[in-house]
Length: 399
Image 1 (tube, rainbow, N blue to C red):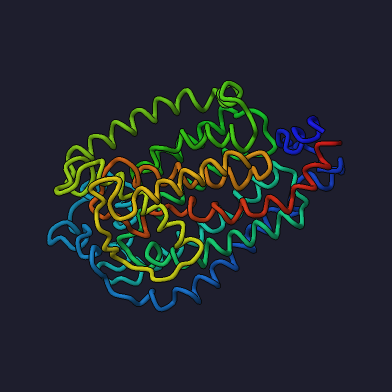
Image 2: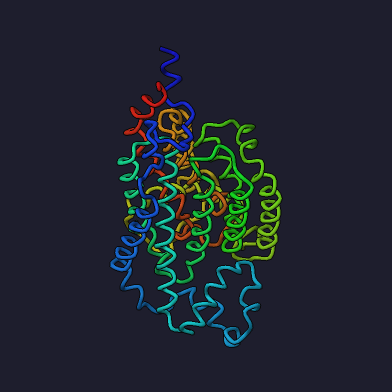
């Protein structure tokens, strides 16, 4: 009995040249992955146009007015003046929009929509690869991947990020983050080649140059190797030595750059007026529960949440929220072998949310655009598919 219990979820299978039943015709989880990905992209474009068509004609709002193209002389400056700041790739996208439509908002909204469609397509591929690592049957994997991508596409929490031009940083950062994860989660490779490592590092750099919170991606890569592929820390580092050594250097540089930005910022970091770091930390316990509630039940959304600051752990239910989160973390750890995808998705959610919702104060205590796209879509929707696939994995382990 003990052996059977411990063997329920053994290490995921690396799918190589042959399929799950040894049939070379089933070498890929999807018979035509490129065609299905293109079909998903086409469907995403149609659905996105239906959902966000009203936003395409919307005016500039709120923080949009503070973007560079609204400064009197900035639009006439050279490209270098646009990209010299802390988010050069994001500003480059605004520069492209200005060349197309100047201060007419339609092209800005259109590019936001294209990023959202691209991110949906990448998310579809990412979920497909994750399920392939666990040798999930083709039809079920296709359904789960399409279902997860559809939720990602239409979820109301995406509204601010897609329809709000100043929220584009999440879209651009999400694009490079998802692309890096797609390359990283290659189910057919047991080690990370130099070519794959270089591609992931370049995409990581692009993500950080789009938004600073992407600096945590190296932690996410190691965590995915350990949680998704069931490796020890030593095995994970050995598998990705070509990636993790240069990524460690890049990560240190990224963190140093973010620290410099925070030291000179009045809207984020320790210089935020009227707020201590521990007060922000206590408040974020409640904010995490708010984000989780909005992910499951997206009602009463707000562009500007007016949350009271928890000056101590005992104020405004911060202690209760912390206890709920701690209990949930313990429960996830206990079921990680039975429902590994749920555990993995929750881990992704926590790591990607931590930079903006932990110890470093931000003026906005809660904002829907801060709830990273990857984290909010992966957990718990993809993980919820794991229990249904338990029988298949048990049969695979016996073989």
